[in-house]
Image (cartoon, rainbow, N blue to C red):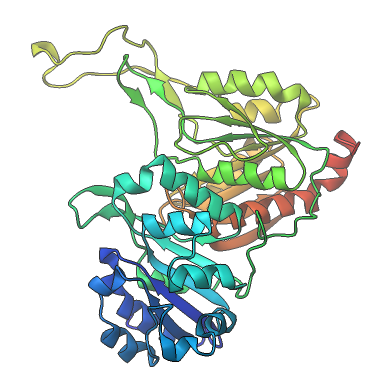
Length: 428
């Protein structure tokens, strides 16, 4: 697809900020696709971006002069940066380097792009692109989490081979996918203080919420384990949003690199059995349980006390005997007088069929299906898309940030189950 689908972004004023990463070479194509979808695009480049892509190319595809300096006398004679900030309904930064993300998180305004981001009330959309180790660094993860809490929309990064030769999350989401994602992001959404949603929303006040997040690790020997690709981001986003909505939140977390959400109590666990024990210890004071964790279905029957060595007898391989792990969410749902129970189903095929079966078989009140075969969402991505299912209905939630997904899911929980929540947990 050379250009975006005609009309999808008609009437949108998109300010494209380009920072100094190798993925900047894709931005002329991104501009063409945005304009092909009907958007009006103005480009602002950082000093680093100018090393990777020329203003001439960007001006040719955007039809507008490219801005790059706060010290442009002709533009700034009339406070041009403020006019740009007012003009935009969406500020898209693609690629967004680790340095740019750090400046946005600090509220630093030392160039035209970061000044615009402070001066605008437009929706802020960030498409990170950097080396996998830079992306995984706790400082970057903390900065990204802070931006998400403030209402920024995070797209990616995608996973794959990088220019440096390493493999993993850090690639900029492809231009066509960025265009598609923008169609589900409301323009002109101001970033309001610590959260972009109504700070007066107390619809979960007095409710005790228990959430599981992240992967579990099932040991094989002292140095090896069985695990999965879960990052914990969706569970942490739900914990953050539930706390913002007034709930008392406990987060039972498998191993992740994510910071503890503000106002949330976190219990760290490793294995599925550890997670079950932690959940059961909280059940008598839980009104709403959301099982987001990717719990390993099996564990090794007999864990080796010492590292398993490669020997002549094991050269052709070894066999591990696996036994079934406890089903945490089914256990919670079957608890007499237990909480409202919401599950997650990460599926790669026949998603609706499998999710609906899980909802009925385990006696859940609600289940959220996400199609993890779509590489743009789930796992290490900052974006997701859901189909929410309950006994007599379903609702599609289009691809957006995991923070926005959390708001949509919790709003649906309140809409459907508020009478039961109110009975279980009367507001003090």
